[in-house]
Image (cartoon, rainbow, N blue to C red; front, side, top):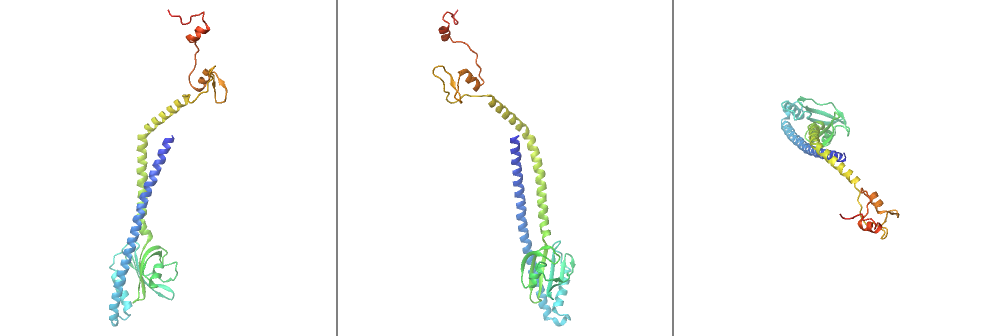
Length: 286
């Protein structure tokens, strides 16, 4: 039974090691995918800034043709171009905003297949962190809360000619989703495979384990029954009594009987017979 428990513990350790390796591998892939997504968002923002500012500079040169000004014309052309722009993810969003009256005013928003700008958001460092960084004149990537309270991965940048910030973002939950599904699948496959493996293993090994247990039991029983005399035995040179561990002197046959499985049957040897009973020839030869 002890051997079976050890085997079960060994299998459990192997299961934990295998699952740990699988989950660690998925985590490494997730980190790589996260970095790749961050890079692609940064490239998207860079291309958008370059395009928007190029359009703005062109419109600025021909501002007289646009009654509402070059900035308004640029935003109008941006909306028109994004109407033909395919979504880059399920939760992906591109936003353009400016700072007015201590609020973030969104002047353009492309969410999935909709062109819609969210309402103004009061400037709060715990909300809409990417856009807050963008309108502050910074650029880069960040994970933080957006205007809707979702945790996002975002790339942001500043367009000085329009005095606006631009953000491309995607929900963290969307990035994690396939990897969480992968971990769940690994766990499910691992549990099923390990359960089947353990079932086959025990079906094959049970007879061997039972035979080993029986053999061990028999050996332990035999060892318990066998008593061996070993070491130095203090024996009287005259009467041949043996001194035990407690200092008492015992007849040699009593000592051996108590320390082994041997039993004595008494007789008399020829020399003693001739000495003790000379008148009787016990070993007379025919």
